[in-house]
Length: 510
Ligand SMILES: O=C1C=c2cc(C(=O)O)[nH]c2=CC1=O
Image (cartoon, rainbow, N blue to C red; front, side):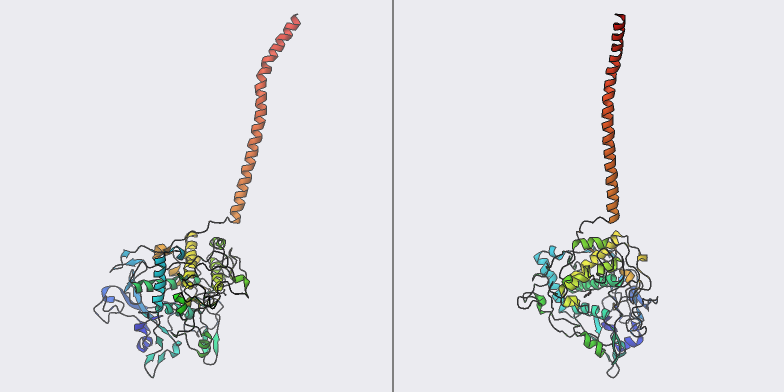
């Protein structure tokens, strides 16, 4: 959410969050955004005011509208490839004192291809992130009008661990609108699902975690792996103790004690309490992660993982998103990979496919939207979803006009700043090929392409034409052969005729 330097009553009341780069990059403590060293300047935030869709009708009620101006209307605007809340870092994919050296894109690999040591390192990195306070960001635990404690001149922000910050961010983006004391909360709002921002939002969410872990490990080559969940069947192939944890032998809903993740405690568990009390999830640790893959006996449909063929089909859906840009959009690539459509793109209210199916298959913490990132399998499920997104962008020649400019659900328009990321970043900034623009790429073997119905018809027509041509050639040949035989006979006849004539002459002359 917000940099620690901005979590003060003064910063909130001024509406300005422009920290300096002192002392690392500038000797001047009052040098906001590294202005004197050419990094950036403190300027106004532009927000999208184009109309949003009809799902949310409480305009003026929610702190997250026109993000982030309820909290701050000025931020650091960084020059060139300088980046970050104080312009003290570089844009993804760039490094060096002047951010002018291009990094080789880090490669996100299939977690099953990691060697034992690489697996240990990845699991260790997640565990370290779970147990290390985020060095830069703090979270709000109250809505805006209760954020400043006037009497004590303090604010209701808290420290949180790097991994729990990742969880909290997702929770905050999906939580309902608080209507006021005693009035409960209203739905119809989700800044990260059921709309075109589903893909751009989760992309940035993963990038933020990847970068936080790179900084934590001081290793810019650290890359999140992915889980290819489109393997069909009812087995979670990465639910082993060297990866995201096997099933416990003592309780089928819990993780094996041999996995470090069995000791993780979830945050943001008591969503009904937050909704009724008007609070926000805080850093309080709750129960253990629950997971029972394929164990939802009440919903047989979610007992199997998506099939490889489903990925092939969804990559063939041509349009990025279609009106109403929601969970009932049909022939929309976004709604298909999100999982509210048939894998071929046809909207079907009874279907759960691809990403949604993978979540629901987990049947536990990872299947509940406000809680799901607490299960580390979330990271791997979403890197794969992002890999499919990147492959779609590549195959369909990404063009910004494919992303809706207006009338998408609130938070999902092209220019909307994604909630609750800081510094402000809009959806369209993530609608680009990752390798060329975002500093990472994927190593994926995509299942071979199925033939589209047009291709099948074209091939059938060509095959039929070939067949006709072959038959025609055969017939012509046969006829030629037969007439060829005649041609061969003719000279014989020709030759014999005069002989016959000669014979006749001879006969007549006799
Ligand atoms: O965490 C999530 C859980 C989900 C469940 C569904 C569903 O289709 O019912 N979708 C989900 C998305 C999530 O992100």
